[in-house]
Image (cartoon, rainbow, N blue to C red):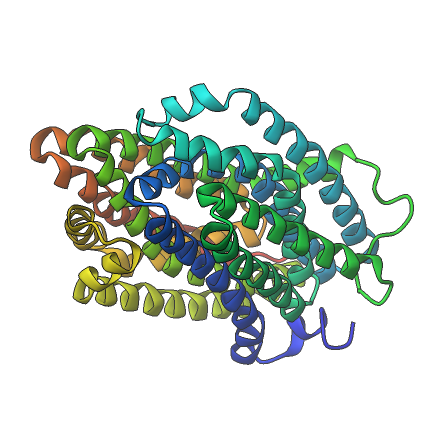
Length: 450
């Protein structure tokens, strides 16, 4: 375990969080930057309506990704806890079960979504003008769903088992492949939005191959072993229960994005949907940095929670909250000061630029506090308290955001759609603070491992 899992117990927390978070941040940020450049290529090379069509696919992509995220996040959290308990056999069984679940769910979900693609896209808010772009993109992406699930799931486990740098390199490989193929397919071959989708799938196949090679090698602390691939009810239950928070969060997010797209289409037209696609890309960049911080925190917190080192658990959490708040505050300032510059990178359409500037300034009004809410939800997940993570995730999306999106636009029109997010973020952060204080008091009294 030299240089990997044992460091989680003894290394200085600042150095440990940096060493685990930095590769994850580079990886998640690179993936988000790829998505941004992908939309820039589509916006500049295909047109503004193509950006709107792509924005309409966000909910469906989130739904399909929700199953993979459930397995990947749940399995990685369980692997960290098992390693903290020095249960290498248990960690290996979790790896094998996660791979089989990803294969089964990836094939099943992709096939079902392909069969019902047309009615799904119209239900998600597609119009006659945007439907062809959305369909063309999703037909390719859904065909490669199993590779998406395998790559993301095993990459999470690679990071949690003590190889954050390898996990980063794997993500950078997928991003590099995508950035090379994207402009080649869109501009040189003239394949348009379908070319962007093909580049995405091929890059994820490259990532899948990379993580499989890692876990096949016996040098990996946790690796594939004969007999450990058989699905076990108890392990599946643990993976699903812990990963359910991410699953429900993505499902709820899909419902919310669908509601946003429909409302934007009603109050602002197809270009307003495209503006949301641009704003979402920018906010997602900051969110992915926070996700990277969470991924760095997760094995540290999970391991030390399993080892009954409560002081290290709380200190790692506080460090992550501070860093996440700095990230979201920086993005808030950048988007408020330079919204026009950001919008013009995606499109030359004056109407789309104007809608994007207005939407960005309104939607990011309370963005600095978002980092705290995201880290706290991930913290509960990392220590195996899935029900609190689920509760906090769902209250933000369902209890606060959906009502805000249904009520505010009726009174202030398009601005009400943009303001739904800030209202929800502020309310959910207050609730998160209350739950956190309550649970920290219980955590400090804990004397036995789970």
